[in-house]
Image (tube, rainbow, N blue to C red; front, side):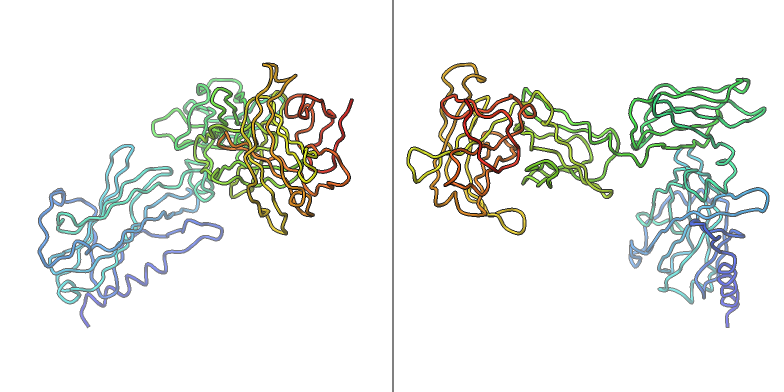
Length: 511
């Protein structure tokens, strides 16, 4: 057996014995850093970089540009009994050995300081001659890194052939990672504690004692891609008597975080987000714009999920999603020309669940209503729409099923009657349509009315009408919820003011 083959086997076995995973650690622990190659190859490592490898040469025609197959990066820890752990970057690479290749070079550059460290591995000439065309796997394990570093790692051939290169960005775990925070000294030396006073909307931060050490900064920030300032950072000087800082806040947002760091160059920043599991405040940022009838929502924090408009038939009922209203919840969402119906709501869905907000249930929003009564022809029902402003409507007949949605078909477009005066409270805009009784009065049948001159609307509906018993049926928001305190029938007659949003029993004329 060749001498190189004798050396390669023990090298691989040595690595498998020194790598281990500490109980409870997601980041593996290494006893000694080193280099290993695939069995059958003899490799030597070099730490100093050959500057001439920066300049590339044209590859031979027999070499595939895909000769470098893979580049995989991970973090490891090297721990000492009383000094804590240091972090190492582990680089795993593979290539198909070509007769023109002498080895590999891996370089790691700190994107913040531009500091670069390189390691190269050379394959002996005897191994190259024997192993041409075989896959070579190399593990570099001695790149020293720090918590929260942003790295740019490059893998090249030796010699460096133009166009034959792999590169990858890598972010080293920061002090928020449990393993790093508990075992890397720079992390637990910088820790702070805090308390939340919800009634006073203040976060009290206790800065760590550091006799003779540097000053310390504390701030609130909103965590997006970076953590954006919410007010100016507070500097705690070494000679300050109190080590407690009071930071006021306005909303309990999941991305509202505390950040603390020493007043030294490249200090590791510690973060804590007291409300990271509380998302309720995110869904309240719904705004209505009367000028263009638009409904909008904009998240105050990064959100992964979906937004849609939905229709809630009654209090506590499921909110049924409106067609073509789904939007990703990554940024500002806006719906143009929205009907201000109390049953029209926004539904937010994330991996944690869903939330519904119904902005038009607040006072001040006027909504249209729908009534049904015998028409002049005894064989028909007249469906009348009462609106505080001019609008167009469509009537559907729907047959209820065990599963949602019901089977619906359009009947007719409602005929509009303009108000006789400009006072919509005394003379609302009216539209109507006549429907055959033998179609509307069938069990499990609903009359459903939609507004058609807007882009998004929620329907009103009347279901299971007992046409032989009641002279008039009314569907609409409860008085005082969706606008005016009364509804009207055609001809300006006032109906009972205690209207229910639930489709159901008929209501006789009052007065």
